[in-house]
Length: 107
Image 1: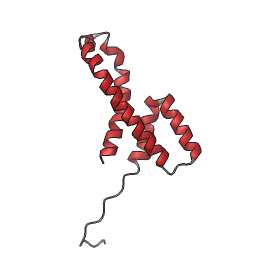
Image 2: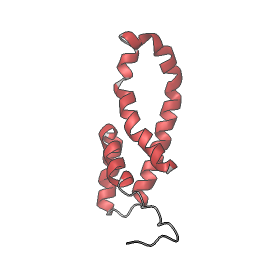
Image 3: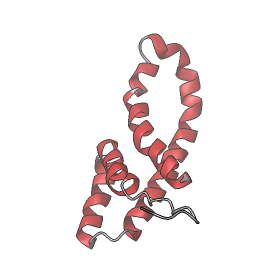
Image 4: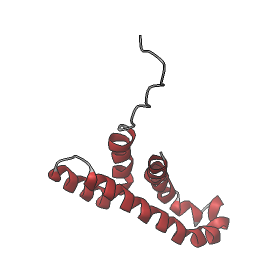
């Protein structure tokens, strides 16, 4: 569960963060640019760990080697689009069903 939550935040909040990047230097958010610069190394480390987790998940999956190579290239070159798609397609969709309650009969 923690892995899915972490990869969710990396996959969906990282593109939002980098899209909002210019607004911290121009416009109404420019007064927060100092805070933004101070947080940048921590956010980069957070994203790097997320990338490592995502690649470990990708290369341990049961996909064909060709698909793994394609997904790895996508994650490195167009990660803003590829990370959320990979998360939704391979991490979110593989949520295991909870075990049945003991003592309760089906039907």
